Image 1: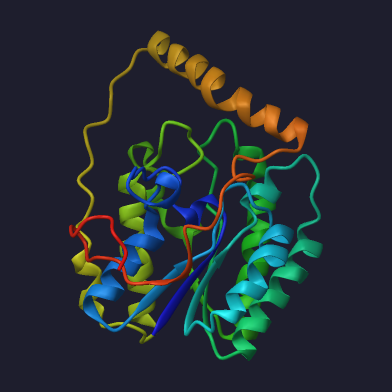
Image 2: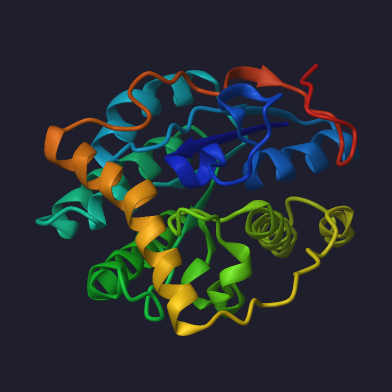
Length: 266
């Protein structure tokens, strides 16, 4: 059985740092693959690269992905489009639907994701209507092509700030761990893996929430703006991406070591 992951930073694993892995990231897809490879006869490839928009995922990852002939393919892109000043979600999702159709016609089972609900984010809450439209179109595509859906929007536990990296854009190790458990649950619900496989990934133990004063929060916000927001805005203005010089983590199939078995592929 072959599992292929496509998309952007969410699937590449940004925020879940591991200096021993390609692109120095682990992420939920690696964590899912570790269980699949340890428990069954699975192989894993990951073509996702941070910063990619829907059109780039289609143009750069679709044909190589089809050539890998996966039994299971996960696809998540659109977050980088939604954050742009102007975007035509309906037009973009026509291409997204075409990508899903190509994989289903090739015999792959497809796993899609809804977008995260930014209602509690002061910075990104204005994108919530776009994400809601994106999600409805994802669900429509899933219905038309019998795809599975990992409903990130409805998983309210991801609103916990302890699951997010310091850049406030990506999940941290704890968030990616929880997402891996959720994804294995979706695969189990759809008959692809036994139900107990998700238990191979431990429930993330959350630290205590910090009790910061207003002044401390302001200093944190200013530090975050200098370290993360300003470079992000600069990349948007210059048309560059943090993933421009990166290659896919696993362009060909590998077998990852099981949970706790280290970072090596074999």
